[in-house]
Length: 453
Image (cartoon, rainbow, N blue to C red; front, top):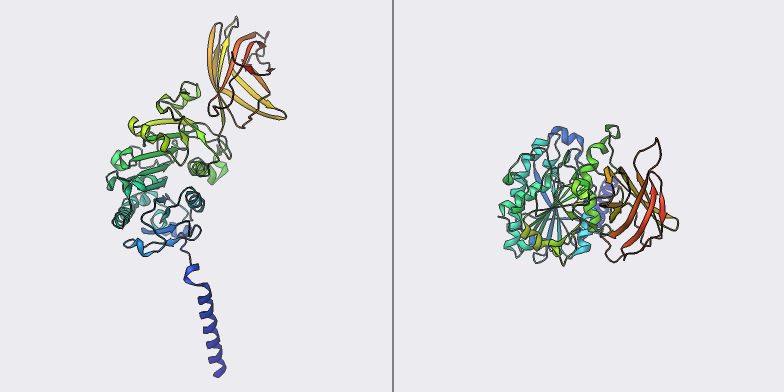
């Protein structure tokens, strides 16, 4: 009897000591972690708001909806970014949440609030999750109004919504009559929103400034333009490096859609610095018809970056602007872009595609302009967009080949009176030229670049 009592008391003391050592200060509120069983059964909406600051960058603290200032780490006077996830068919937390939080806090001293609506988003029935976005938006709107009462400025609130979360952010902005400072939509969801009007999806009137990134418009993403500026990576649809067949499994379905998040992470990390060009279509962009940015001068062409202030006012005045860029398949995603101007002098009309290589010592990078056949004839100037996967800063030699596909009969000569290479996103680099080159079709010719006259 006494032994049992002693063991009980010892156990009690050990438990108390463990609680005392851990302390409330060490407890973190984690993102809701569900599994497939929850998704099969279905989940009802429950919204949690997890606060991260520079004082607790790795340890979320749940905020009270009605009294956010009760959490001592929350400062209403600081800018606030809300990170809003989308549909969660497996119930698992998004793999990118922690990285987004860390990178946002590295940019600025702010409140970063992760909107955890995994209970609601985790349903095998996508349509159920869609219906919950309106209710979740009302929940977040009420919280932001409470923030405003406690001293927060709507001008300094930034909603970052992924997929279905982009439309949720739009609903919040609409309920606040477009007074939110900024909404960023990362590949806004397409299913059930394709034919929706502006009041039923994200649109430019939902915030003072709306920027949108498209990566999967032919599947899970939404087609069209829905912000003051819409970035279209590789035309906004198929992304390089993503599987092309269903045999790749899950990646075949999600890779293009998720690329928007990974491109945004790269932009937050300032390792990408991808330049985009205003254009009416991706085909015109690839045909080198849209390589000017006069509307933004003295600012350069828009870049996929976190800080859009150099272009913000011009974009708001313009209403809606589409900008296009191409990427490589892996980090840091950016390509080295050159405008190439050819003046041909060959006697016979030839059709073909162009391959260009830049050499620097043992380093070589190649651009293929092969999306369509190009016309080369006498007294003709041709402009091309050449995009290289690797950045070579000191170019010692250039190789050029025009492939006509002619495998039978004599090889015709092609004479180039001038070739001019103009860097597009590295303006400090020199423009390179070469004059009077005689080459054979399908044969590579190499030369050292010269200063342009």
